[in-house]
Length: 405
View 1: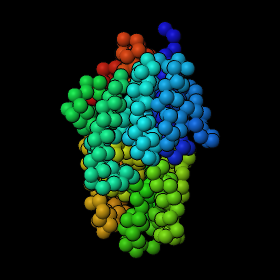
View 2: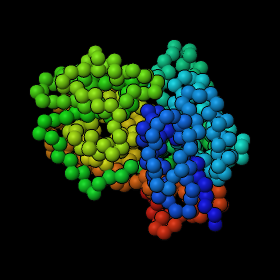
View 3: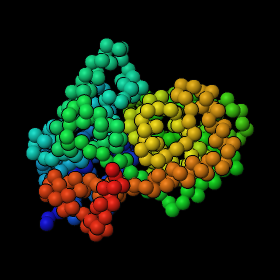
View 4: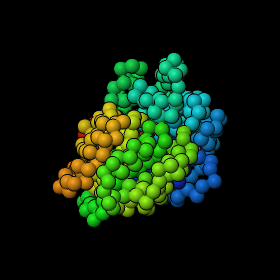
C-alpha cells in the first residue's frame, strides 16, 4: 500500500497564534509514525520554524487573512492530500469576527474540493465566554454572535469527522446538532519523565504560563502574590500576548512590574521543562476557559503543582483525566492569595498533587492519541481502522480504545 498523505493545518511554534505548541507536539508524534507522509500547512510568516522529523512544512495560510479556506483547499489538492487534520478552535484563524468566522469555513472548502477532513475543535461556542475570550460586545450583539457561532458549528460539522478533547463537548454536539460524526480524542500528554522529581526551590517561585490578555490575565495574580508580603517570593510570568490583545503584557509590566515579578516572554520548546521545574507552583489566573488546557498537562508532566480557578471546563478536565490541584474562586484576589500561601506552606501536599498529576499525564500520551487518529484515518481513507497501524500499535488496538474511551 502506498504512503497515505496526511496534511495538518495548524499554527506552529514559535508563532504566537494559539495552539501553536499543541501543533508542534501533534506533528512530532505523527512524524514518528510509519507508512504515512505528513505535511504541515502552517502560517506563512517570516519565522524559523523547527525541523520536525518525518514532517514536511508548507507555509499555506495567514492569521486574519480572509482567503484562508480557498488557499488551504488549493494547497491540499496540489499536494495530493488523502486527508486533512485541522487543529483549531473558534479563534484560530483570526482576531476579528470576520476572519475568525471565515477561517472556520475551511472544512467545508476542503470537502467541496473532494478532500476528507478531520477537524479537532478545542472548544465549542456553547461553552465559550465570548467577552472573556476577546469578543467584547453588548448583550444583543453577543446573542447575534452566538447565533453565528451555532451556524459556524453546523458548517464545521460538515467535516468528515469532528473530534473534541472534552466528553462534554461530544455530548453537546450530538444532542444539540444531532451530529453522528463526532468523536472524543483526548488532549494527550506531550511527554513526561519517569518520575515527577519536583523538589521546588529554597526560595519559592510562583509561575504562570500561557498567552495572556483575554481570559488569562495577570493583574490579580501580581496583586495576590504581593498581598502575601513574603521576602524572596518571586512571580514568573512566562509566555506572550494573546493574538487578540497585542501589547497587553508590555503594558502590565510598565504599570505593575518590579524586582518581584519577572516577565520572561516566549519560552522555546527546549526550555519548557526547565521553566516548570524551576517553579514551586503554577497558577492559572483564568476568568473563563475555552477547552482543555495544554499548560495543565505540561505542569503534570513536569511535576509542578497547579493552582486552579473553579471553572467548568477545568473541573471537567480534572474529573475526566485524573488531575488535581489547589483551588480558588475566580475574580477573588484574596482567595487566590490564600490558595498560593496554603500550597507554598505545605510541601507534602505539593508532592501528593505532583504525583497524582504525573500519573494522569502518563496515562495517555500524544503518541497514543495520534494512533487513535490513525484508526479514524484508516477507516475513512482505506475502509479499515487498522490499515495504518503497525507493530505494537496494531497489537494493542483494544487497549488503546479502552484508554481513550
